[in-house]
Length: 248
Image 1 (tube, one colour):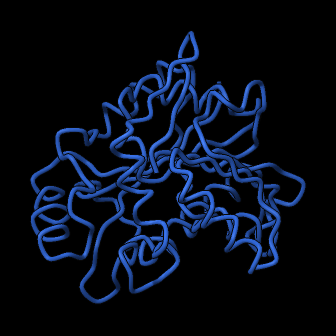
Image 2 (cartoon, helix red, strand yellow; image 1 turned 180 degrees about the vertical axis):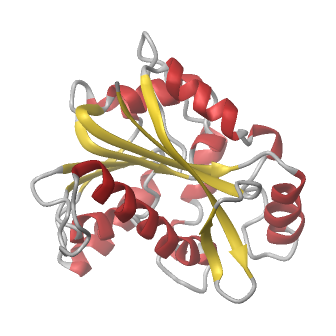
């Protein structure tokens, strides 16, 4: 899930230890009861938020099955493709990049089984050169890179003129430490060593990085947890949150 990006020069923000950690989970990535079970539970909420933002940005009514038809999408830190495959089903020409070769191999294999054509690449965002995408996503990744500012600059550089950027990341709060590390990693629901609480970004910090990269933030929303419903989109950003940005 960790990825490289660029600032003014080709500088990688890949943390080799993070890449190794997530690469070691590749074999279980598509197992909803395996080490990536939490990501499987998060995915429906991610997709719900993405569909809302896609429809709002391109003026769609929400009734179509392929709102991304004719558009390109890039998922940065794609893991084994949990988000890339739904984006492809929404009609996009999808590219997924990840720092761990093991994840990309698992992503390729699963896409083949699913009958989907997705351009998967090992490495960082700087390897894309001058390519631009209508939709750029990066979910729960920025907290794993070595230089968040350079990473955001790389994401902004990959965004087309009328493009849409959507990020998600944990907030740096007492609740996120308790839920994700003390409970999540402590009970084995999340693989131990996945998170470093000190690298979590508060919403105002991430918004500042996005604005420094020349983009405008148009929406922020919380990702919360309900005992009755599981993960939900919320106005409370204490645990985790989404940020959507566009060009000028």
